[in-house]
Length: 78
Image (cartoon, rainbow, N blue to C red; front, side):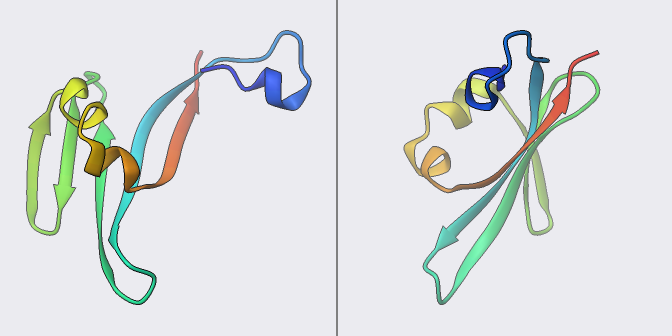
């Protein structure tokens, strides 16, 4: 992703999404999970003591996961 269009930069650096923190619930209570990409570019979902490998299409197309994204973490491409 390039953020230059929002920062007013013509030749902006590109970034890769590497993790998403999710919040499920309300402002008063809820549950946090995370989806992270490893060095092999494989995605994993972390939910308390459970960790499972997932495909990008699984969580991008899941409306519940997509709507629960709370924090997106990007790393600058080399």
